[in-house]
Length: 116
Length: 201
Image (cartoon, rainbow over all chains, first blue to last red):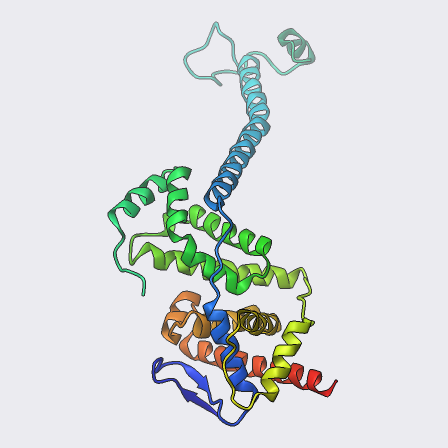
């Protein structure tokens, strides 16, 4: 039969009076409440080492990601430059990258550009 | 009851830790460790598990420092992080299907038998008796779901009100009550079964 503890009016409390085993449970709770556990000396040092380790790992991960993206970005830039030379020429360049299509994309032109 | 305002020194460390100052966070950990260690001890058994859980709690707090907006004391926020991390730790343990040790040791069996035959119902006074009582409780707590265990631990061992438990866990008041009630019944059932089992031997 549930009843409520006066000290914690909003909480449930199971009646213990009719059952031999329940007072035993109360004693177990009391014993556990008394337990004071603390980490072994040097906890903060170990914690800081772990945090630094995680931060370094995250930085390394980020750097790995950059090196994975960088070649792709460089290739894209190279392609853009190639496209500029293939679709326009310096002689009639009027300030726009894709100003005219004077040099068609042919094997000869690609060889001339060193891309083939 | 946690203070509502932070100590000025703690505020300085917090500001530094938010910018990634690990040393400053180490000082915060040193300040709050005794209280948070008690929470970790309710969920994990054995030195190594407790140390790991305590580190997990502080690590999660460090990562989430940006979420602490200064509303209420930092200690209260930290306690919330501790409970939630401990709950997740129990769930992970359950997913890994780590078997909890449930066999009672000779000392624990002796305590149960003595307790059953003791008409005066005197509380355990020797340290060894208190240890036995505590260990039996932890083995019984291992039989509960992580959520029910959290509810009963906060209510019975931390002495928190149902409203506070609801605030920390995000469960409704009635849900917390149901969990506490169910947990108590299951603990009583398990202890009764164990006590009878050893009495019959």
